[in-house]
Image 1 (tube, rainbow, N blue to C red):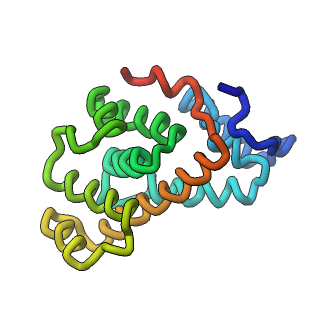
Image 2 (cartoon, rainbow, N blue to C red; image 1 turned 90 degrees about the vertical axis):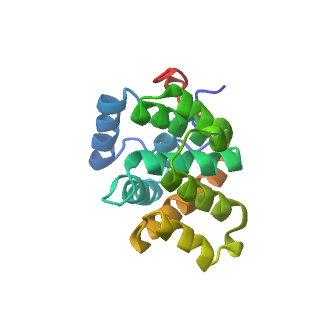
Length: 188
């Protein structure tokens, strides 16, 4: 495993703009590391800002979905796409947010073996279908979500999280993005 965040030779902007450096410092203080995905995007500050802006919106902004539910979607999508980076990073987030290392592993390997409620199962089934065959989604699929209590706004958020990770999984896989080593041991 290389110390470079990706297989590409795209060095970070040096020096980083003050706002970017501040963001990286917050990550270091809060997470104990700067996620490699951020370092990978830091060759182009506009691309980094676009990535972090969308990530922060779909994963952290107000939503009818909990942060754990959004992380679960990230892991299910990443599992289908076999994205090593996202499975490692977001599997660790599921372990941390749920307080359940077994759930984190189940989500990474086969989410269907996890003890999930009807809401979570419907949400993850939708994210799975969106990942495998989005062109097959019909009103019946949205009805299943509404029937377990999701609003139309929630359905948008489920789709946005799944769509974001379908994109980032492909970029991470295509560039051989490597997860920070720290993720592997977290919350076990």
